[in-house]
Image 1 (cartoon, helix red, strand yellow):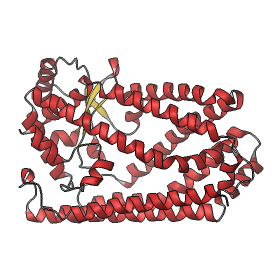
Image 2: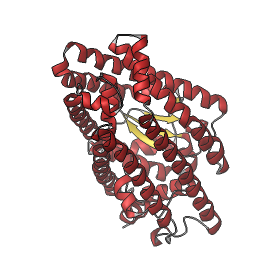
Image 3: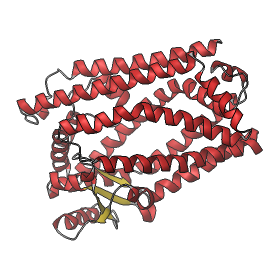
Image 4: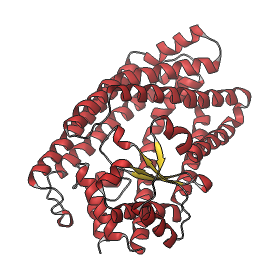
Amino acid sequence: MNILYWLIIGIVIAEFAYDLLLNILNIKASKNPIPAVLNGLYDDEKYKTQQAYFRDNKKISFISSTLGTIITLGFFAFGGFAWLDDYVRTISDNEIIKTLLFFGAIGFISWLISLPIDIYDTFVIEERYGFNKTTPKTYILDTLKGGLLTILFGGGILSLVVWIYSIIPEWFWLIAWATISIVTIFIQYFYSTLIVPLFNKQTPLEAGELRDAIEAFAHKAGFKLNNISVIDGSKRTTHSNAYFTGFGSKKRVVLYDTLIEQLNTDEIVGVLAHEIGHYKHHHIIKGLITGLITSLITLYLFSLIINNPTIAQAAGCDSPSFYVNLSVFSFIYSPLNIVLGIIGNIASRRNERQADAFAKKYGMGKAQSSALKKISAQSLSNLTPHPFVVFTEYSHPTLAQRVTVLEE
């Protein structure tokens, strides 16, 4: 057991403690008075329900985090990586096959551990508070489809990266990055036409008052809008959402049917004004570029330790391999990943403020504010998150912050 082994153990424990701290801070802050700008959003009875929903979610999150940490520490302490490494080597000498078997086994174990928690969350907690609409059949089909996509895309990309490394090891990080970038752009471009239909039905928004209002606003804002789709989100949940996807000729605004049920026409246009604001400020492209740059840095850092025997020894393995060193690297990299996540959330909150400002500029501030209040109340959202949790974890400003600016 080298120093790196104990460093990784320290990282795993520190991450658990960090998550626990965030939960404790948020639980304490949840007892604070509701901001004055949000008074009346919950009556006394509904606020009690929101607090109970919040606590139930924190409990299941704590159980999941604790279980994952214990199993991870046990895997290191009892030589789980070394045993799995030895096992896959008995099956094949092919590096691609060994890598797929290694990560396939780890992924399957992780899925088995998380499955009971996910089922409880979906069919007990979400059901208890009236959110769940997922049937066991839908849940099973979603699980099978998600697993198949992971195998096809995840396994395919992983195989390609290992193959690139086997033929051009000194430049694998750059070529692998280029390959992953092409796949990422392809998926983002065709997400609504290839991925979404596997899980949800999308239909064009029918002609009428809502479509006319959306098209009128898009014309006013100088936004060419050809595709407005409605997705059957109510198939799984009563939570509502809207999002903008794709770019170029594939750009599309997607509305959940639950959103249309819960909001009036002006409020929906307010939500769409915000989404169009993201497009006008090029947030999608900027986010894509940032993600690609981050993946380039990550692959380069991994290339520096890919053959380092000390890395493999930290997992209890005798010799380095692509898959073992990549597994250990993921633990070493995680603190940096947390820092990058915080930086990313800071940038994301800035983007959200810009998109809100765009909606307000075109006279939709109060309509968007009203929509945000309704969506938050329906979702039993926490209205008093701790400032440090907001800083580190939130991709959006708090509801109180957004409403204050939108209604100024």
